[in-house]
Image (spheres, rainbow over the protein chains, first blue to last red):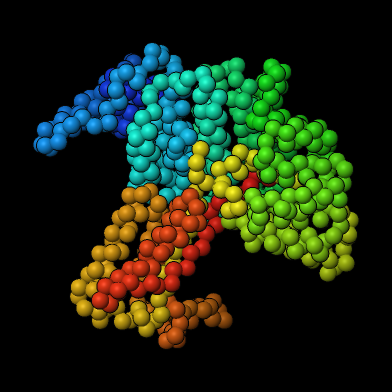
Length: 445
Length: 137
């Protein structure tokens, strides 16, 4: 075994074991925040020692033992500190044992996910904590992925842990009544991690691979724990069907390549067939949800050998269903695009007019971008140029701004050279990520 | 889940060239109070998990305006108009709303100056192009 392979195997094993080990340590010491720190230290120790000395016979037990030793040291220090203090009253620091249920080790990953994605946390805190406590990533890795200093990320994680402690969330599975809502929050956080990795562009980098890979791994894990849940399967399918196009969606200099002009030979057929099988099986079980519908739409796109072969009537029908399930303005925008592709651009523009009064979209670049695209399809190039430019001025993503400015320039040049007024039906069609919207406050792009 | 997605903002602290040059001539206690204020602000931003980076810049007399000459070599020009606003320093913060960035900017703006009175410096706040770009399916 080469050192590199051993490293990779270790890393995989450590990430797999991280939530199980954390669960075990919390059960022993009843203290989430300190246990999480201790497990992180044990993981770091393992990355140093295992590639050198070999993986221990029972890696899980090794990690629990090292983390428990750290916990004991920590508690000893804590007790000494408390003795020094006059008011050595037991605070809410340690979780009461009564909060612990009778769950088994297998539930720990789920329990931790429910804790880390608690609705009382901001999405950025939940993302950071999930990646560390459940994903087994180090603070440095998370900070690197989000392009913030390690110290900043460390503070964010400890604040998140403090709010979990303050909110008194018990370390057990939520009740069946809470379950659906809490699972929704978990899936949303996993979706955001995937999206951050897939579409991120802080600076010139368009894709941050490791975040998407981690999101897929964690969602796979939730799917194996809850194989009957259609939305979990739907989210996993959506991620796979989107990730399948990764190699084709950017050019050599990181520029965006819209779906219609992507080289489909670069799409990952293995991911496409896995995603398609997952969503088909989930949909056949009956309870349809938003992630399943989005996955189904992605599957329809992925099934077309050429952009011109896309089954737009089916996509439109799926958006009609999705529209009935959510009030999400991004769904409305995507629906307008699909309607334009089926019934022509004037129909799509008509639908956009209805969105003009939607306060959630006021000043939002996506409305302008979609309008520009549909106006171009309708042959009104002058108006399309205007809207492409407005959208370019409103977006806060560099690759997107480059793309929108290039679109405007292309149209304005073809106008001066008296070139075609032929509507470009191939279009630069896009589906906006839907779940992302819900985390943005209304009106702020 | 509450909270919007994080966005990075740059907070640019502008001073008039004249005002900036006045700083070294403040009484010691005013200078110390100003420095302590800035250090405390940065420490608090780090602890709240909002600070990405912060830099103070040298005084205007260290600045050069550079343009490329005909053959691409740099032509430097040290002359700045007296009236020009001058970038004295900047912060980049990672926050959940523009309002949060404005609040931090207002705190920095009120840094103590002569006699401890708030300077109320203009702080230009702009989003950094850091949002993940939209999915182009």
